[in-house]
Length: 216
Image 1 (cartoon, helix red, strand yellow):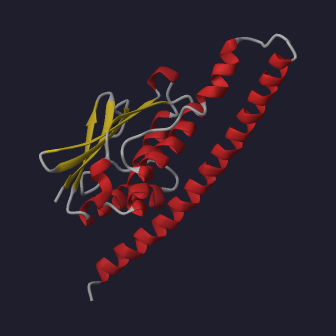
Image 2 (tube, helix red, strand yellow; image 1 turned 135 degrees about the horizontal axis):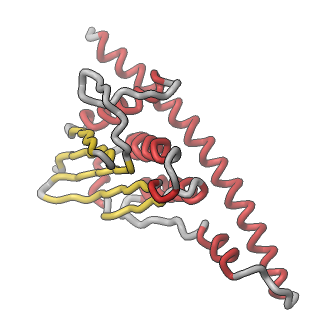
């Protein structure tokens, strides 16, 4: 037996359980937010029916914007995940943009889609939340060309990370070093599982995690 493979599988499963727990927490937060906004909207409608003035159309637009978080990339699982992330991003005042289509992502299991994108986007959110509002942006680019499916997740980066692990990935400075650090390993594991590769690029103002998978 190759005990290293068994250890990697065990660590991956543990990470999946951790991710599922964290995703459930954020899902519950999003549901609570939607419920609050739903009641806010009902309140505004009641006031308008009664002919009473509402404090600015901007407030109504803010409520409605929460429901305008649906994405149509061509992959139902990814759309659901991105919609959940967008709700969280709006709440945290993070500008989240998604570009491209993912109809060719059907080769990947839904659990791996959730883990791969969930890790990459959550890490990007956590990275930018410490910055001022104008620097809080996360961009997700997906698409296929020349029989390759490409994924790119980028966020603002101030260039402070200097130390790297042996595999070239940046070392985490978070308290949960084992779990957060394994987030990078988990993504790399999924990339290799589908015969793809993962690359991390750091520039003075951008952190980019990209993946490339062969199609067919």
